[in-house]
Length: 111
Image (tube, rainbow, N blue to C red):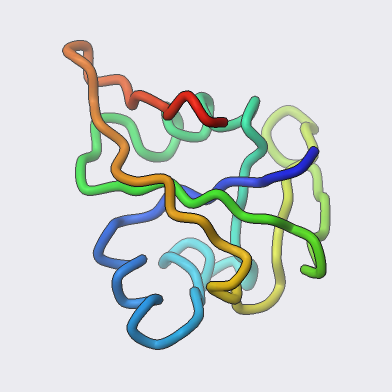
């Protein structure tokens, strides 16, 4: 697997760009690590944690050189976590996550 993904508020990503690193969303700060998903986990992550929300962006992260820990979560599936700040050099913003007419987030084709 080449990439992992982070969904966050666009305003939070804008703040990260201003300070030079991504410290995480509120849930990440509470849990002590940044939550990521694989491409196959993204639809369920969006449905469970971000249903119907607007103002979100999707970040593609190259985990090379990051101390990613794979830990069981939903149903025992292994999810990537980072117990550190995320350097911007590892991130490629893929843009806003639009909602379709049913209120489901549309993922970009380049996953």
